[in-house]
Length: 455
Image 1: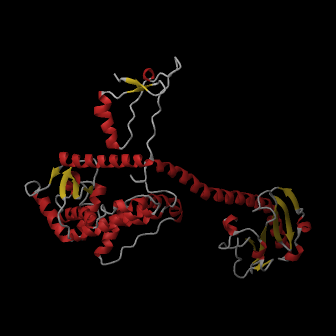
Image 2 (image 1 turned 135 degrees about the vertical axis):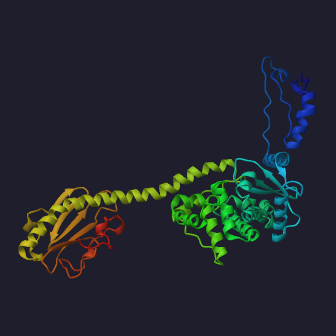
Image 3 (image 1 turned 90 degrees about the vertical axis):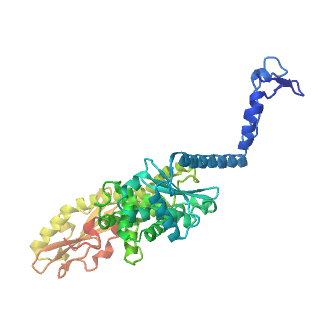
């Protein structure tokens, strides 16, 4: 039990026991957290009988939290290295001599000296990775990929050369310096994707066989049974599908380019061409601008920003789109009400031989005022049908839409709506009718837009 002693005001303070002195207190010092032995109510009896007070632990300050996080990261890295050394198979002249020889030749080709320690490890992942700890470089090759490429030595060289590229370009050494910027939207993930493209070039240099290099990448997608039967050229055509919103967005916030783009880049380099990739969706760029890179440095707490950013950006896109949809729906109400006027005007023009001036509301027997929101009136002026709108929406209230009849050389009555153009040779009731429609094209139905023709 923990002994107790009285303080200056008569309260009893706890005295650290053996556990606290030998275990808890030294462990807390290593972690950089102030140690206060926990007091029990019986050990902290105040002067007033029957009243007990528990001492509240003091929260660690920001510097202590940073030190604690650094210790946790270092501890995880130590565990990773320990796992690799204890579970993976070290590649050497006596163990996997063929891989050791390939690794040595690739190191010489890319100018990496000294050569890193190389291990083979069996995992559920189909990839590889390079890491660095305490000034030493490590390359871990996954057994499944080695099995998939065992009959394709040049592809295996690409696989090894890619990981050596990370070490040769000191991507791992620069990580601490780039840590503050690595969480920035677009920039952090974009840098890591650029690193992958760079290392693919190192892999291609080690492979010296573009087709085999592409097959080395395809091993990630097809596992060990389909590598040789998969066409890299056909697979590379899939880059055209990456123009869409979701594919663009997920690539912009991810550390790895789409595999089809990497295969396409290698194919271009093999033909002595600068790699070109399809453009990305504009709205994906806008949304990705609000999403920080979700790596270890970003912290799990930043993950909460993703749904907030999604909601905000989608709202910014969806609300104007919905407003345009609502405006188009109200415009269609006016067009539907004007359909009977169009039919009456068509009949009148067919009877009088296309004399526009004789056609108005009185001649066709239909009143101009409608007073049925969102339509204020439908007037017929020299054959043209003028729809006037009203309503609470500023985009609708006070606006007009013109439906203009025309007569072809064959005597057929045709109509032009809004900004749509008239057919060649048609005699229209109003020569410059497009300027009388006050709605923008985006809210008009397709047949009333500038690119549409008369009907």
